[in-house]
Image 1 (cartoon, rainbow, N blue to C red):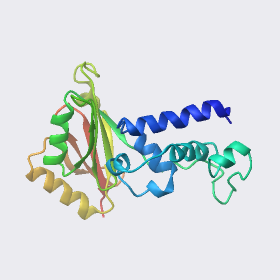
Image 2 (cartoon, rainbow, N blue to C red; image 1 turned 120 degrees about the horizontal axis):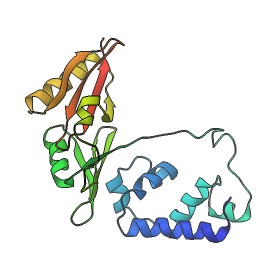
Image 3 (cartoon, helix red, strand yellow; image 1 turned 180 degrees about the horizontal axis):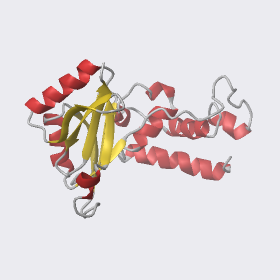
Image 4 (cartoon, rainbow, N blue to C red; image 1 turned 60 degrees about the vertical axis):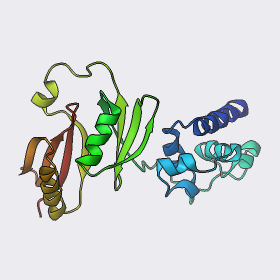
Length: 213
């Protein structure tokens, strides 16, 4: 466990991020503090968040129930409350884009996402969501890939799945009707999946996949 001075600094940093509207901290809060578990990033950033909340977050990351337990070194979380191995509860792909606003418009108007948040003035970071799929958008002002290597090598920036064959077909038809550009249309793969790949305004390849039956 880190020393108490460093842990206090960590808690104050989390609190400062929340107060300054640094949206990436929302995921830490949601994943660590159960009472925030059902809130979106935007809802978390609008919610009241005190130093005691930040201290509890740090304590739980260190394996304790609360800040007091951390300070005393007692009342550690029991095995029934904390699994033996860490559990990865969520993942968010990050896309490199030349214009966060243009990218948000594409995902909302063409692909049915909603804007969870944008950060910066002008925006340099944002996130769009649809159901449980989250895509982070990161402004990059220089080329990230050389030439046409992404299209030639079919380098995916994100993969999103649905549960049924009917859903993947409906999703493709919806995107087709919205004029979405495709890297390749809906097709069945030899390994038993049905998928298609969308091409976003920055050349990112986004796979949508589902079962064949």
